[in-house]
Length: 441
Image (cartoon, rainbow, N blue to C red; front, side, top):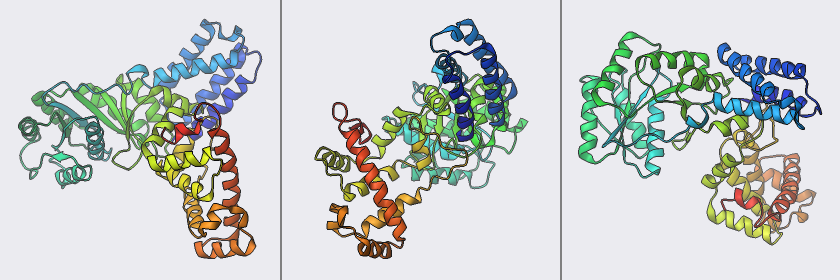
C-alpha cells in the first residue's frame, strides 16, 4: 500500500543520511519533500501540518543538527513521530475481554468489510483460547444475516442464527443471552452500515450500545477509501464511544492516507489490520513496525512471524539439514519456493525485508514461483539432485514438459545457484545460522 510514499520519503531521507552536516535549510527542504509525499498519499492536511511541526521542533529542540550523525538523528525523529501518528503504544493493544460475555460491536459504513472482519476477529480470538459467537444484527440489508452465518461457518465459528426479523436492539439482547447460556465468552455484533453516515444509523447504534453495554466498539474502515474513511470514523466517534479502529485491505494498492490519518483524527488507536483475504489474515496493528516499513526499514519481526506461521516444520528441518550438509539441491530449492509461496503475496513478503525498496508500481510476478516449481517437477530425480547434468537437450525436454521455454529453465538455474550461495552463507553465520529463524526455528 505504501510503495510510492516509501520511495519518495526514502529518497529524501537517504539524502539527509549521506550528509556529514545537516543545516536548518537542509532540514526544511527535506520536510517540504516529506510534506508533498504525505499529501500525495492522501494524508489529511492538518495531520501533515501538525506532524511536520513536531518533527521540526524536536529536531531543532534536541540539537539534532549539531550531533555527530545529524542525518541519522533526523531519521530517528521522523520515525518516532510517525509511530506516534499511527497511535504509538496504544495501537494494537489487546481487547478488553472481562465480561461474561464481553460484547464487541463492529460498526462502520456499508461495504467496509464488517462481516468478513467479524469472521477474522473471531478466528483470531479462538486461536487465543476464546469461545466467540458471531451475532448478525443488520436487519436492513437483504441476506445480511445469512452472509454473517456463512462467514462464521467458513471460519469454523458459532453464529447466532435467526430469520432476520425483529429489531436490531432486540436481536442484540437475544444474542448476548444466547451466548451466556451456551458458554460463549465473546459476542461479536455485526451491526448495520449505510452508504453514508445518517441519523437513523447513528440512533440504531446508540440504542444497541445502551442495551448491551459493549466492552469494545471498533470502527471498521476500508483503507482503500482514503480520507472518506477518516471523516466517517470521526462522525461515528461523535455519536458512539469508539475504542479502536480495524483497518481492512491494508494489503491493497491505495495510497495509504487513511492508515496514517485515522488514529490522529479520531483520537482512538488502530487495533487490528486486515492484510489479506484469508480468514487468518488479521493481525494486531504495530505502529513501530508499520513506521519501519513506511520508511523502508523493513519488518524483520513480521517476516519471521509470517515464516513461522507458513513454514511446514518437517520441510524446514529438511532444508536446514541440506544447509548443514552443504548440499542444497534443486529438490531443496523447490521446497523453499513452496514455503515462500505459502507466506503470502511476494510484494508483501519483500516489503518486510530491510533495504528492499520496490519502485512504485513494480510488478513482482508471484507466478514466476509457480513456473519454477513446474520446471523442477519436470526434471528427473537425478537432475534435481545434480544440476550439472542439465545439458542443452535435457533443458529442451524439461521446457517442453513444463510448458515453458529454455530461457525460463536457464533463468531457474541461475536463480537456484544464487539462492544456493545465499542459503549457505546465511546458514553458516551465527549460532545455528540466521536462516534458521526464517525456517521456523
